[in-house]
Image 1 (cartoon, rainbow, N blue to C red):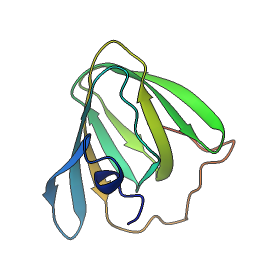
Image 2: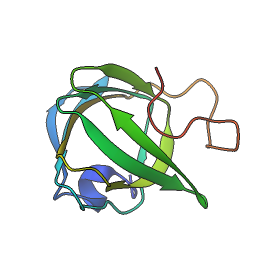
Image 3: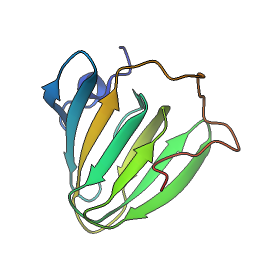
Image 4: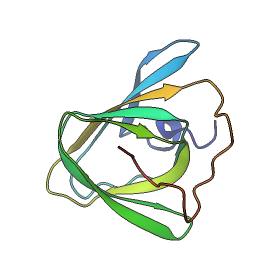
Length: 116
């Protein structure tokens, strides 16, 4: 995948497990770090630290503040991100390899970032 975060942002993402059904990524950055645009399939994100990030795609952005120790659904999306907080962002993503039932492209009503 051309916009695979492990390829576009290898300084932040690394594969920690993979099989034919899921891929598990670890993400770790510091305050002020930014990612280039990349794509996530449908995923579950688990926060290892509390953090504040700005996610952007298609000319819109959203600030996300999440506590440590929560799991959130992340619908398939393409975005870039910036750590705008004062703490490191440390998360685990469990990416699903099954196809999304209906292709989702973030639009005005589609969520950008994690959803409860």
